[in-house]
Amino acid sequence: MDRYPPIAEHGMVGDLQTAALVSSGGTVDWWCTPRFDSPSVFASLLDSERGGHCRLAVDLPEGNGLTVRQLYLPDTAILVTRFMAPGGVGEVADVMTPIESTAPTDRHRLVRIARVVRGSLPFSFACRPRFDYGRAPHTLTLDDDHSAVFRGPGTDLHLQCTTGVALRADGDDITAHFTLSAGEATAMVLTSTVSGGAVPPRPSLAGIVDEVEDCRAFWLKWLRTCTYRGRWQDVVNRSAITLKLLTYAPTGAPIAAATMGLPEQVGGERNWDYRYTWVRDASLSVRSLIDLGFEEEAHAFRRWLRDRIEAGGTASGDPLQIMYRVDGDPHLTEETLDHLEGYMGSRPVRAGNAAADQLQLDIYGEASDALVIGSDIGAIRGWRAISRVMDWLADHWDRPDEGIWETRGGRQDFTYSRLMTWVAFDRCIHAAVTGSRPADVRRWTEVRDQVFEQIVERGWHEKRQAFVQHYDTDVLDASLLLMPRVGFISPRDPAWLTTLDAMGEELVSDSLVYRYNPAASPDGLRGSEGTFNLCSFFYVEALARAGRLAQARYAFDKMLTYANHVGLFAEEIGPSGEQLGNFPQAFTHLALVTAAMALDEQLSEAETRPGSRDDLPVAQGFAVPVAPTAGGDTGG
Image 1 (tube, rainbow, N blue to C red):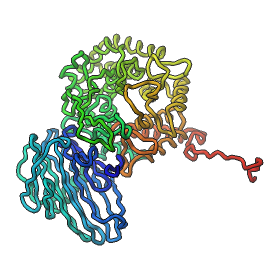
Image 2: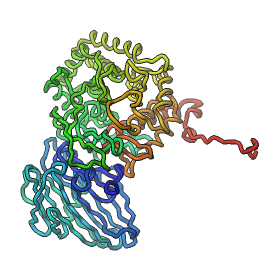
Image 3: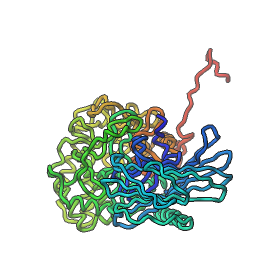
Image 4: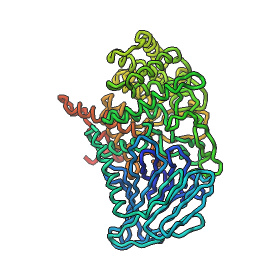
């Protein structure tokens, strides 16, 4: 299956309304426009023949000594792919300048710049769009040698390609071949529009340089707001930029990932559409950005969530459903795209997400934790909205649900759902009291305490000496690694330490953490999955807060080795260290941020304690067992 690059062999560029993935070979093999959740224009990542792509790369025969490397310009989302060969060194830069307007736009630009910095190199360019997930044919119009327009029948979406080199028609696609020498450059500008319109003029290199600089200036200015000054500045900055790229600026709604259909097990059926706004994922993402000092994102998300509550609840009467489209539309009908092969044959390929109809009560805890932090509380309308939700939750919290992992094996009394219910009441009680807000504090407090007692009595498994996945099982669940962080239990409480030990024995494999054991707790799906990166970083945080700093730091440093070449993570890690699942995933990057901050905090505290040398990670917790030689002689 050489037609499919590894999931990790990609960087992402975006303009805060849409995003594209560029492989380390110079191919745009994923782009949905004009929004994250729109049908694709390029989707060769899900079908190398039918999906469509745009390739710009050095064109040399195999075995000619070509080496390719990819990187981001520091602290930006400008992606550079470098081609190094005996005849020279070339680069392709991919740029999407952020659209700062809060109004959605139907016009989006992906700028691709080719240049040579040493010697002379031949390049090839091919643009082969396939509209509507490869279902809609298109027509090609060449306006002149440098401009082309692709029009998709049955859709208003047009794709315009304007270049600095001569184009040739290849059926309904376009190609170009050209050679650049040191100091020379050219650009290809792909512009998606919904209403069509005039073809933009041939790109001016001077104008393109200004656009690149505008993009660079945006990211550097945005990062200046970041308050993190810890030991892992570069990786935290990259995660923060990734979370920002995955946020739909017109509404402030973060999405779970840029892609759909990438498998949790290659060849398996666990292939989901993650281009939507989960209340849980979005709340945790925004909370991480708040902790880094990015308040503007918090305000935007509060408005979006308030609007969802005010718009009315689900058909069953719940105030929120678990996920929405980026504009707040609650309709996410799931369909199977049978015409697509799927990544390396991983089928079915699904668009939309049927899990939107599930009941997951934990979302009210994550939402409350993000909404009521600080002094804003979403203003008067926001407080009234969240207080109505809490009044409803006081009557409806004690129900089985599908849980955080969206299992399709039936509802249970999930401990994590109860934990986050406790969080919802705890945070809102605190906000009501400290902010002098109108609320039924007495009722909320009674319910909060009832939830606490229920978790302690029914979520605790005496024989296992651990908190378990749900009340009728002895299965462990890594989501409960959040128990100390949310303040439900002290990170050094004996009951928590035995739970942490049990997870370490059963769910952890060389610092990588499985969500749960699906064989012991059937989730209604065939196949297996890799370790879950979110949980691996939660494990680091839990270890750090428990004072196990050597183990925590070593686990964190090992996790960083699983990042791809530009610092991005997918959802899971497979048996051979490969990245699996949708990419890049917000869950993973928000957990990286919280783990880094917790580890920084605990390390700094340990360094200031008298006699703290034994608490610090000497050799990062690495020990090599020494086996005696034959006869017991160790050579001493």
